[in-house]
Amino acid sequence: MDDIGVRAHAAPLPETHASHITVLADRQLYALHNVMRLAGHVSAYPSTARGYAPSNCYLLKHDDRALLLDSGYTAHQRSLLRQIGSLLETNDALSVFPMRINEYMSVCNVEAIAAAFDVEQCYSGNADAAKWVDFGGRSDAAPGTAGADRDYALKTTLVGRAATLHVGRGENRPLVAFQAPIRLISTRWMYDAATHTLFTSDTFSHEWSQEEDGPWTTTAADNRTSAAHIRSFLLNTRYWWLEGGSTDALRRKLADVFDKYDIETIAPGYGRILQGKDLVRRQYQMLDDVLRGLDKSQVQPKYVDRDEVR
Image (cartoon, rainbow, N blue to C red):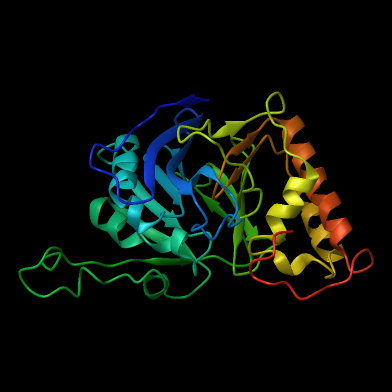
């Protein structure tokens, strides 16, 4: 793993900071980080969180093909396009897979990426991904304006509840995509056997830094996260509804994933990447313990005020 440390040359937009590329597997897998300051305005984190966290897009490469997981926020568009451009060869064809087709961080830059690169397809569980990613803003532009002179099209490749995709030609580099075992909205996880990486979207996203330069990976040697921290993170973000709910089924689905796949890296859509089997297993066990303690058999559900910190 190496940190290439690509920085945007243009002046950053408000709440936008450093950008970096982390090499998770040379010529195979790259994490594209664009860093946000946490000051109570980023909904993926508790309102009380302070420090910095990246939104993460992931570029998987094989032969002359590449796949981008998620497309980042509009505020990071210029930086993200530079990151992608630094990793693609001239003749590389790119596919895009928004892991959460109905969330900004997944879809905001799909059209800009398609305008800048040779995009073959957009993977989606919805029949017309173009509508979901608001594709066509440039193609609908008035004559004489930027983008009006280019013909845009976005092929949709449907992905079922569980499907095997491939990066590269033929059956090379299989990727298993499936519904997230824990989710509030339509969300996919993905497993890459070539790099033993599990992409978990908005789960396991509870790691951030006090420094805007990270580091954006963590291992068992330096990680001090507790189950109490994970519990608080879940209940103070979009998973507030877990307390007093029925979590047994969620735990079984989660266990199925971690029993089935040989996972060495957990790559979330936000925050630090978890590396090494020891840390992966420990983080999974802590999440399972938290879910067990939140089950209706252990705790009563209650009304949660929006400003209550748990």
